[in-house]
Amino acid sequence: MKIRNTLTTLLIGLSSLTLNAESHAQPRYIQGKTLQGDHVNTQGKVTYLKFWATWCRYCIEEMPHLNSMFNNRSPRLEVLSINIGLNQSEDLVKRFLDKHQYQIATLFDGDGSITRSFDVIGTPTHILLDEQGNEIYRTALMDEALQTALSTYLAKELSDKELSHD
Image (cartoon, rainbow, N blue to C red):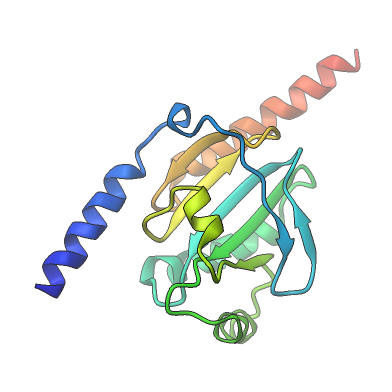
């Protein structure tokens, strides 16, 4: 019975991840203090969010790539990992990040408010927001389409700025 409930929850979660940006029309921003002690505010920034947990196998497999993306990101891109807090503690997540030497800016969502505000119901969940806080891409796994969405949007942003200075 437990396996059936888990599979049902997973299937519902995966089907909801195919929603397009129009279903998330309300702009959203994140402000808070990371587990590393830094203050973040995503307002006015292109933002890539990854919702994850230490018990999520796919989340863990994607962490090296996310850490690399964080370390090599454009100054125009905010990269945040959001630990969903479910069956987690700040100390556990800090130990996990330290053990693997991940520097990714990480917020701990102990009360689930960030997770709920972004309608996240499964991990991993990847969300890309534009500067106005509008969702422009969502997926369950880090994939080529996400990479394309990131690179295409940033290339467009750069082109728009170059054109406005001419």
